[in-house]
Image: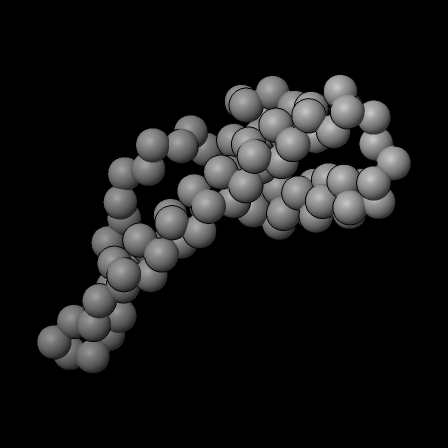
Length: 82
């Protein structure tokens, strides 16, 4: 899978693909060349999932209570293209 396509996947889609790769690899009947390709794709998907989780953590941290008790969201600049 292309890195650009991987970076555009939602967290849920990337996680589903990653889980499918892990299931396939755990079955043990994958040729070595395919196993290496799946490992590489899985690594890219894992990085994409980690990036989404970090972005979510940053967004959560940016939620702040104002003095009047209302919650305000302060947007942050993401490196990832939407």
